[in-house]
Each structure stands twice: as C-alpha cells, then as structure tokens.
Amino acid sequence: MRKSIWIAAILAVVATCGFGIKAHAADEVQAGASAPNFTLPSQEDKPVSLSDYKGKWVVLYFYPKDQTTGCTIEAHNFQRDMAKYDAAHAVVLGVSLDTVEGHKAWCSKDTFSFKLLADPDHKVVDAYGVPVSQHGDMKFAARQTFLISPKGKVVKVWPKVDVQTHSEEVLAEIAAQKK
Image 1: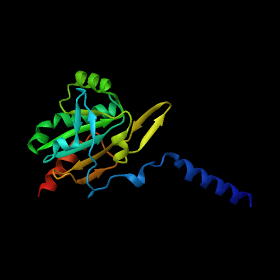
Image 2: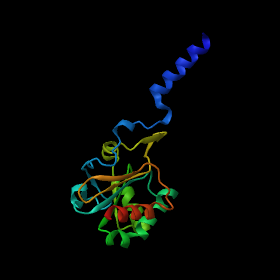
Image 3: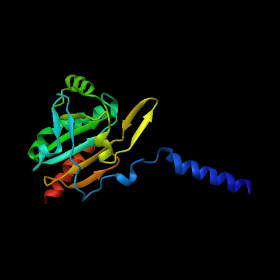
Image 4: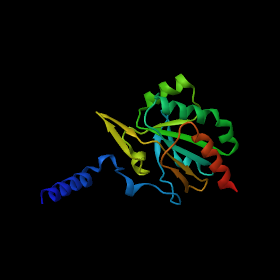
C-alpha cells in the first residue's frame, strides 16, 4: 500500500513539474505548418520581420546565449558559409533571449554579418514552441532550427543541433528541397 502511494506521488510530481520535459511540446511548430510571422529588433536595433524575407529561404535558428562556446561555434559556421546561403537565396536569422545590446557587442567582437534578433520576452521563442530552461534567474532558449521555404512554410525542424556540422546540414537540406 505504501509503495503505491509513493508511486502515485512521484507520478503527480512528474506530471506537474515535467522535470525538464519540454514545456511547449504541444505548441511546437512542425514541418508543413505555416511559419508564424514575427518582428524583433536586430543587433542594429532595427525591426526585422519574417515577412521581410518572403521569396527567400529563411534559416531561423534559436540558441541559448551570446558569446558562449557552442553558440559561438554555430554562429561562426553560419558566417563562414554566408556566401553559400546567399547563392541559395537564403538568409540566416539567429534568435536568443539576449538583448539588443548583447547582440551588438557580440556582432562587433566576432563580425557577424547576419541578423541576430533579441527576444528577451520570448515572444518568438514561445510562438515557435522552443523550450526555455532556467538556471537561477537566467533563462535560455533551447538550440533548435527551423527551415522556412520561400512560400512561408516550415519544411524542416532540427530539435537538436550539432554546432560543428549544423550549417552544412542546413545547406544540404535547402539543396534537397530545391530538387
């Protein structure tokens, strides 16, 4: 009897808290869906909207934190391949919960030419169903990428990303989608 009470209590805690399970799992944007439109400020403190890029491929990538090791590797690989994205009529947009000022400092230091969008209120993070984790009073978006077609449809979602090879994977998917 006591064992079954403990099991029920543990299941209730797991159901209530989720123990880190994706809080937005039901709301995640899936391949085939229309990409939710948005407007966020870039590192230049100018508004950038998804609708600005109608007719182009959009690589919308979410990352945890400016100037951290994994995020820097991922961003540098996107920057390294920027000529290939241009040739594919694609743009890269990075989104994190960091501020415009944080993006400005990072882009100045690392000379990124693509847009980094500030979403400190996680409006776009929530619209795409990207999980948010918290460490102390700091919040971090999960590392996920959405490939959006020139017609505004999500054609591929990467719920987990290898920062070392991700840019090549995205370019290969754009090429495959064009066939």
